[in-house]
Amino acid sequence: MVSCVDTTVFIIKTLFHTILIYLFFAFGPILLDIEPTKYNLTLPQTFDGPLTANNKLSQADHLFVNEIIGPESLAVWKGDVYTGVSDGRIIRIRKDHYKTIAQFGDPLKCVNPWEMERCGRPLGMRFDSKGLLYVADAYYGIHTVNVTSGKVKRILTSKRPIDNIRPLFVDDLVISEEEQAIYFTDASNKWDLKNVFYTVGEHDETGRVIRFDLKSKNSTVIMKSLGFPNGIELSDDRTTLYVCEFNNRRIMKHFVDGDRRGQTDVFALNLPGEPDNIRRSSDPFRETYWVALAMGRNEKNPSFAMDMLSNWPKTRKALLRVMHTVGTVVEYFGKLIYFRPLIELGFKTKSGSIIFHTITNYGMAVELDTDGNIIQSLHSPDGRTTLLSEVREVVVGDQKVLYLGSYGNNYIGKVSLGQLTKINRPLLTHEKKKFIDLQKKNFAKRSTDPKPYKPYKAFDLQNPDFGQHQQQQQQYDQSDYRFDPDFQKAMKMRQMSKNKSKSKVKSKSKSKTKAKANSKTKSTSKSKTTKTITKSKT
Image (cartoon, one colour):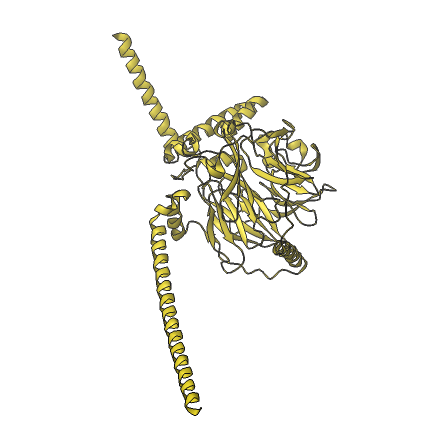
């Protein structure tokens, strides 16, 4: 009897202390300043159609294991692949061998991952048409790298405010040589790269897209209130920007030219994972885009951290504060006695990187067409190749190869998609003409001076009208769009307009037939009268 009472008292005490600890970490004012928000995002019901599961990513080759750490982005020039790694180096990969061609910051200060802000961290990378490499540094802005000499030059500093806010987390970029400008993403106004885990945990929506003019050196915010904007890409006709929103599991479509300049639409919604970078495929005739997903999943296999806790912001707040507090204490004592393994353990706990691979246990990448539809997907159900940040398609000889980048992996992935599909027929005239015209158009745009840029008001995704429309769209799965009442109304209106147009066409056709009949009767009567006249004359 005594033992039973003791156990109940012990359980009550444990529950009481647990509740006290939870309340302290959820509402304590002296801890990490973080306010997670509630969100509700849907996932695909199952993996079928273009999302049918396979093992293509699981069969990927892992190159340079434990030699290359965190190859976030990949750029290609003359068959060589370039990437930036966690210690600030820019690496060239040629025939499955790598070489360091440039270094950001002092290499002696870039040894420890908890001091990456001292030397910088290269993320998004792009080549221009002349072979000059542009690199987005998460801490120090945008740089150019001469891959022949290794010279690094900063062209945009992140210390200077843009629209009264300093870029805190420069992530990805894309070059528009026609405009002589760079579009880049500023992932968050609150959290830097070391605290990227809290950007996701808080469901932060303070990200921006910024246009940097290479001639005037002026910067303009064109999109704001984005949920962790990550990858960015330009369409083939250079009128549209595709921006990946990691936190909202979607890709936005922003018009930078044409009749809808300055407006924004949803390009791809309810993706089966968080999109990181987006890159154009190597297909010259079919415009498609590869999107790397940090973690793939569907409604049957949701993530506890990303999906189940989405409606429990206070619980997320308590858990994030526990990780930050424990990590800070461990890191402090490690630095006090200068014990490197303890410092690293504290940093990984505080930054959340210690559980990156625990959360991301299903690797995935998808290929999208110009309508935002998924046309192909690559899977790693066993989690062997996961936490992807970029998929770069390269043609090597007659083979199609995908290089896989990752912010957190200790290797570069490589997947062979097989031999290029040969066309059994000659190209049609309009296909040749389209391809040649596109090349001429792009060359003409690059060779002529760009039009003077006219700034426009930044598109705010927190606009109430846009938000309502987005919430309505998120409530319905893309496959069940027929049950959307707005869609049904639109279809009714469309049917009514079709019926009206049909009735008009019928009335017009009837009047035409009547007129033809009248004309025929008149002509026959005339012919009869002429015949009678001729007979009478004879």
